[in-house]
Image: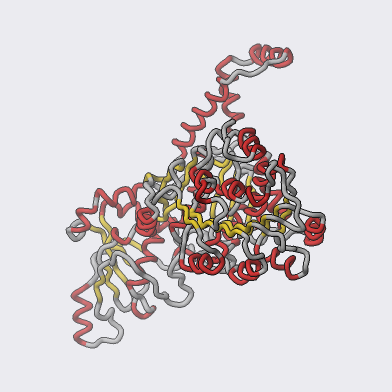
Amino acid sequence: MLFPDLPAGLAEALTTRGYTALTPVQSAVVEPEAHGRDLVVSAQTGSGKTVAFGLAFADQVLDEEGRVRRAAGPLALVIAPTRELALQVARELDWLYKSAGARIATCVGGMNPQVERRALAGGVSIVVGTPGRLRDHLERGALDLSALSAVVLDEADEMLDMGFREELEEILEATPEGRRVLMFSATMPRPIEALARRYQRDALRIQTGGTERGHGDIAYQAVTVSPSEIENAVVNLLRFHEAETAILFCATRDNVRHLHATLQERGFGVVALSGEHSQQERNQALQALRDRRARVCVATDVAARGIDLPSLSLVVHVEIPRDAETLQHRSGRTGRAGKKGIAVIIVPYPRRKRIESMLRHAKINAEWTTAPDRDAIVAQDRVRLLEKLMQPVEVTDGDRELADKLLETRTPQEIAAMLVQAHRATMPEPEELLAQSIDSQRAAHQEKHREGFEDTVWFRMDIGRRQNAEARWIMPLICRRGHVTRNEIGAIRIAQTETFFQIPRAIAGKFAEAVAATAGSEENGGYVAIEQSNEPPRMAARENAKRGKPNGPGPQRTFKPKPAGGGGKPYAGGKPHGGGKFKHKNKGRD
């Protein structure tokens, strides 16, 4: 037997499931020093923690013969932050404890509470639920915790972040003395420490993976794009990788809805998950992914927690994660159970420094690259098609007859070309992207930037101090309109009714093309006219300032770009930040 120290039924379930060894966190919780003790476990997403706490409370659930003990109520309670995670936990515990005769009930929001109450009344061994629904059953008397021997807080940090402190405290207060409290959390902030001190006794702390963040099986890529081309980059990434299953993360429900509709229109099999979807809709979406009827899922951070799809090999951060922990949780949907995965962060040019800092904090080495273009996608399609055609297939007599008829009217080369075209017709078309050289040229021209932009081109904007023009919001506008970074903008000179600024000559042509492409786009500041210009009339400005002429261009102020910061509000109707079609407001988050 592979696992002689575990109860026979659990060892057999692990072997049947394909386990040849326990993961580090699973091994840690079954060590002799952990038996019977409260635990505080720091374990990352994808580390096998569900099976870990299932093994940890086995002594409290099973008798000496490896069967579930008889009791007046549930013996173990698992609390998870989201419906999807709770349902996933229940599925994992079901196969682990099936041979032991365990009955598992789920209590989650969005499901029929009467069905759940009937299940609880029928006698269950393990209950898995979300904080709000569990508290509701507890207050109504449907959930009896008098016989409870172990309670698990799964992703405790996330539950506190979501505002479930009151519910957790009420549930824990209702548990009997002597029960074990097992807390599993990716991070250990102060609120978690306080919760542990209040409800645990002599807890054993377990941290697996050292200082690493559990991303050894995930290859990270940071893809730089123009802010207005985020959606086109998403399309090309999906086409280039052709992952069996991919998940795309957005920040808000509105953005999930918009990207879902866009990808549907372009021919992708795609589903959406966000807080606005009912539990039935979520279940249908996940089943479509498992059945291969859909290959792409667009989701918010909260809605995607608990998703465990064995075929998920590509994660795309369409919108930048709010912090390193969110980056980790999102990316952890892939690269699970020893399988390899790819996590791609789409980085608009102006946000590169933030992502570099986030990656350093997360101790992640990412490959910086650009979005794949049409040629790269066509090359990948060619490789995949050849691999597919070289695979052995069973040919029937009818197939041979049809092949003979085709050869009578077409040459083998024509038939092969028709086959290639038929294959391509089933796949969405790649998008044409603007030249991706602006950001890549930054390093090449960095020395020139430091020397003061010796060879530059002046551009002019039709706004000035009369329209409340200030460098702190003009610079982000120039970045969005011209797809450049702050380091690629020289001096900015603001006059009474116009503003002049410098762009290095090496990228001036690309800058002018991007300005023309974004003209008229209110989201990108397209309401401001930008054109190439001669050097600003400095002398005339100074003369008018001396004479005090009210209608002259007035004195000019020269601003040099700062490495970070920005903000402020432009004149009426302006939008100082943002890019592409995505909204970066908190409204609709989840």
